[in-house]
Length: 101
Image 1: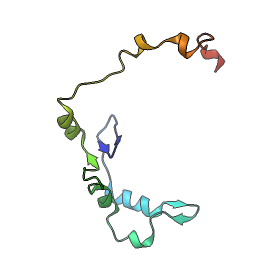
Image 2: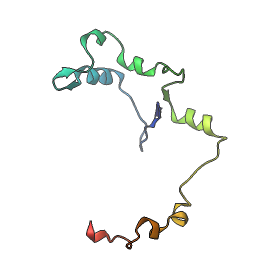
Image 3: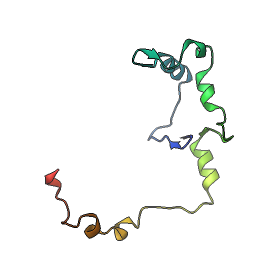
Image 4: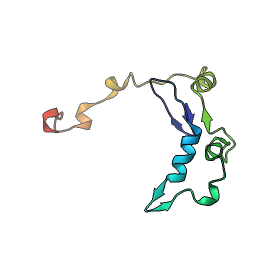
């Protein structure tokens, strides 16, 4: 699942409890002040997050939708990082020893 530019992942299916989400937002306080004031309490707060953003793109995307949308893109991995990493540049005084941390 993707929300805006963040991927939400887990070993189990992600289930969003819309009622709990709205209630938690209504209870959210910073220094005792409600982040979501009473004027917003009659709105479906989760629905506000699912509306297309200012740029017109959807804010939420399922894993299946992401896979379909990106199926023809080149896959980039970090498999080559070990061969490109140069210890002498990263640690000119020698490799760190784990016991020192």
